[in-house]
Length: 416
Ligand SMILES: [Zn+2]
Image 1 (cartoon, protein in one colour):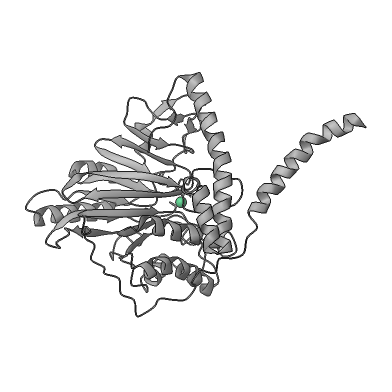
Image 2 (cartoon, rainbow, N blue to C red):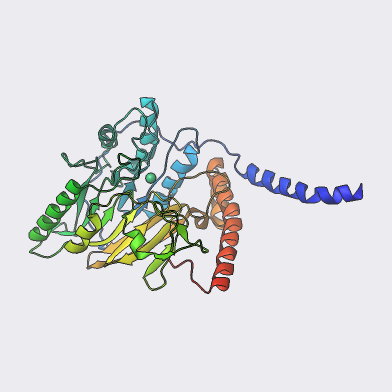
């Protein structure tokens, strides 16, 4: 009998822990979600310029994968929280935003809920799509961008005649509005090619980039206008700058298209952040990256798509940077969920600062206490859940990383 009790103890303990964590996720729905359509009264300023401090603060949100009744409220709340904490000058949404439903009204409701977050705060938002946005559902890519544009905060453009939907550029004016000081490129990197592989930016989009880049330079007295790129799918050159190892090593990830190749940070390169899964570029490569190296106007390319990758590498003068998915996916998920902030100063547009905010790091005991005092049960329970799970998962992640670094004498993660 006694032996039986002894055997049962670990099982009971595990059960108690699982039930404890499950109970953290029981919460009411979020009353702050606004499903109503665009408010014709609101009118966000669509001209993007450096703010009164001479800075431009960009919030990069990506891969929210919004789906009604599938952690919808928590994801909406996370995006809202990011806006609240960061107060950005512009939001860049780089695809896989909403799961396009066969029910048109459902798709509209989801877009409304997301866009109302920005509309209410007068934050301009630039949208481009990923591989999933129009994979299914009632609306085509063209119809989707038109619907996003019913909101006055949307500054998205579909340059007609180009492959895909939502390839455009956003000139950023100086704080005194006198001249274009910076530029944001937005590319539709497509969805899938004819063989079902991931797609990439097409030749006609690259031609458009070359011409538009030349025009910007010409209008700037022959000087290059520095810029960032935002798109869903990372460029294939990422595998040129990571280090190849022929077999699986700790923190090395298999090449998406080559089974016998593994890749990890090359200590000889300039690296940032953490790789947690293999990068997924397009199968083909029509030379987008090379064109940008040649023009010399791109400081960094920011992508999403690979949800748990928050890393960057410098290659041929351009930072290839991936940002985390901003989606809440429930109980036991990676600490790699969050958003990226990018800041640039109009007095020196040759450099920039960026940081990654992991959702688990945002909440501490004080913020949980504050949410409790505010009296919204949903917000309080969300904050509490992130705080508790964050602590546990952060410790586990740090311990694994440190053990690996000690055993392999190799840095597996860098500062963001
Ligand atoms: Zn994707």
